Length: 163
Image 1 (cartoon, rainbow, N blue to C red):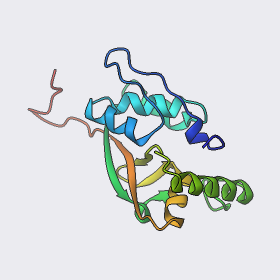
Image 2 (cartoon, one colour; image 1 turned 135 degrees about the horizontal axis):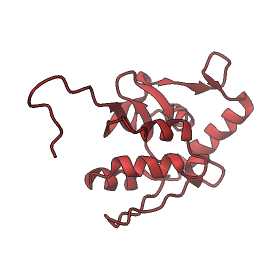
Image 3 (cartoon, rainbow, N blue to C red; image 1 turned 45 degrees about the horizontal axis):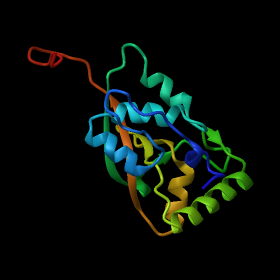
């Protein structure tokens, strides 16, 4: 789907694992199986049409993040962007509708769409609002998401890093 920011994202592979990171669910699953979901997430979020507002904080020096790839209930997510002024990041209605309709057509044609990005503790949807809406309009209530959260601080004996 050429007019979708998500579809147009390309990502470099990882030289150590030999994985080729593509903006697809299949590629995210491969990265997850290889324990490279963090690297896949950075490649995806930094690709064309990416989301540096999410990618950059995930790389902060003191951030130790946990990443999971899981199927989620789309109805339980809280989008931070959408077609009205109440959202943190409003999108003009005509642009929102065009993008959602294009994604609906792409899903119907078999698009291997990338997973959504969701903060695990809050279920805040930070990347994938248009994909979520397209799926809901097509009658799907579940899809895959990269869920992440910062690891809680270490508070006692036996909780040190595994290295």
